[in-house]
Image (cartoon, rainbow, N blue to C red):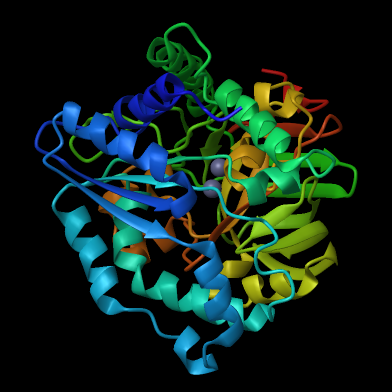
Length: 410
Ligand code: ZN
Ligand code: ZN
């Protein structure tokens, strides 16, 4: 199955109305792989219909990226065009909404030297850091959606012919994004309300610490005093609601960057910049990774952790029940947008300032003093399973169950 014209229109409308909630007169920037051009055109049309003033599209071609990683001189990989970074900043400054279609080939850079990849990702992250702050502060609306490409589908369903694999992946995307609901926009409204209930419940608890126990995992994570749980729709700088991820099943907050201790084991493979890292464990002391092992992708993990000072500390903790729609499909997507929404996860690197009361208005030093981690990277990795138990320590020192056997206990 490829999506019908009608399904594509609905998907586009969902990205425009629920994803970024385009406002009249707003500019919309779409970033997408060339394979997704038919969806991009529909998103553009839907955005103009919703009142957009300009729609700007940035296409990327993975095969060209691969050619560059293979053949470009080493020093070129450390250079990022500043005009492009400035153009993104300018769009953000002027209140644009950003829609990214995220569908990388998980094995694209298999065999490419991990240090060449990390040089390029670091250069891009440095150049784009101002632009990224607009997104991470939720100043601008942004959303990530996905698209079933043949390369990605073949990785998810290796036993199937490519056409069948693409069909099957579309089915999963349709389910996970609630496109099959009678009224998808209404379905998202309801879903956001459900997530908000959990958020309010957790915010009322004011947990000081979370304790994770599972196979290969025994970890304590302190939460900053003024942490804020978030989930579902968020308000941007203008107060308009948007959904940063479609699908989304998580509620998340920030850990205290200096108070994470113990060991955590991954439960799903991680697609990091075109390389797969799998079967890995991280050991933390006072917030820093002091030891790690990986069955696959150890080089990529090493380079990731070496990115900068904050790359070896946590910036996000997210709770997702094991019994959730994406998880129940029992599929490993090799795409963090899907896998993170099937599993409790943590993120190495930058914390979202919005996870701290007043965080978006704080200077970097203030954020750090409150326990917010700072880094060029933000990489989610999955730690949830049917065997994961999580306890919360309340402000008066009592311990209570938050997760039992992978699912909500509160
Ligand atoms: Zn997350
Ligand atoms: Zn994250």
